[in-house]
Image (spheres, helix red, strand yellow):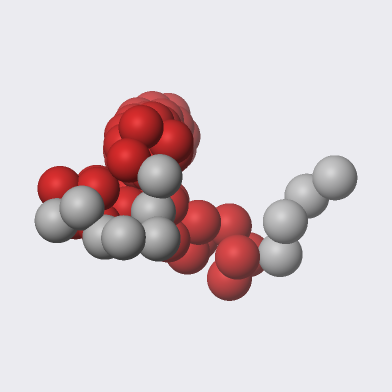
Length: 68
């Protein structure tokens, strides 16, 4: 299954923003956020978004180098 291009392009930025938001909520001890779960989801979202961006960047650099 493939994602539509706009969703595919926006996914890592969404993950990074949500991860940052969740970590900020955990640091500020927002009363409705369970702290450990919020930290874990935030960290995994940040890591996931960063990895997707890195893999995408490496792939695009390689395919561009092969075309030249």
